[in-house]
Image (tube, rainbow, N blue to C red; front, side, top):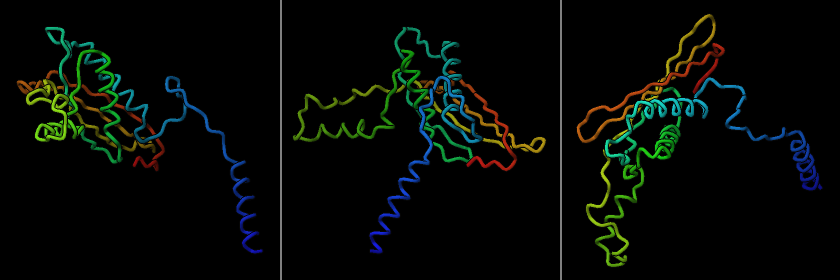
Length: 197
């Protein structure tokens, strides 16, 4: 009888809590007016990446003289903030936008272990060699995209001011010269006790 009462109580509690749950809504990415947070969020990554991509394209940095797309590799993007963030979120949005521009093609030999590992299939008799990548067929990157995200905090008039800086560079790997550098700053003002990590 005690087990029956426990089960009944658990069911009543579950239905009660479920009935009190708030309705989940879809947020329109283009018109997101929900409250901002002090930590970095998706909108901040979008703002930073969109601004820097537009700058690259406006300056003609990625316009190759012969009209062909550059081959770009995403290098290291360092997270020097107090937050555990996935910097791939920023690099992925930049990568997608640059590829859509038609100005670059991105090589994934650093990110996808199978690109390099597939070369070992040439040594195996188990695989149809017609489908195996030939020696010397990988496209070498011409440009490298690297960057850093930093965070600084100050107290101003009893509030916490948080400044995030997104810094990016494009380097020509054939001569080591920097073709483009850009920065995007995102500044937030929050309650002095706000924690951003």
